Amino acid sequence: MQGLAEVTGRPVRSAWSRSGEQKSNPKADAVVCAPMTMNTANKLAADISDTYALGVIIEMVGVGVPTVALPFWSTALDAHPSTRRSVAVLREWGVRVLYGPGEWEPHEPGTGGEQLVKYPWALALSEARRLSG
Image (cartoon, rainbow, N blue to C red; front, side):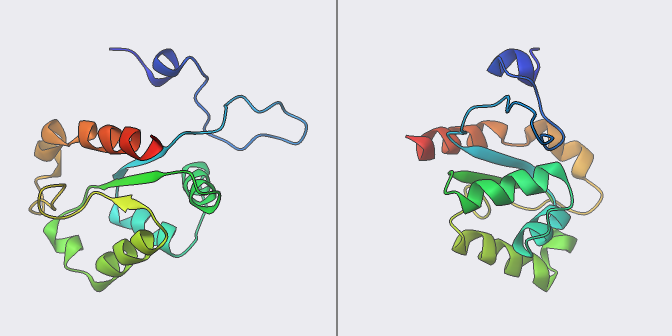
């Protein structure tokens, strides 16, 4: 299995560029946020960018780069009012949240490990390709 750097031909970044440091990545055609936890969805919807990954997603939304989010949380977390509110906010911003019938649906509490095998990565990548034209 190839790693992300081998597939893209670019280094994987995990921290912001420092002042004067050359940017290593070209403009993104699209960005995928996956697996998006409830915590990530809530932080994004509240504009909290306390990690590099959150900051990149918020920045990409801000500059209009097509953004796809593929959730991963349990039905217990899904029942919390902030989850639906955060999904609605992200959709208002134009984020394509792959959530609901025919896309991704929450799993029963305690079964997350079992769900990873069938997590629909291809769905997120296909949607990112479609949105990027």
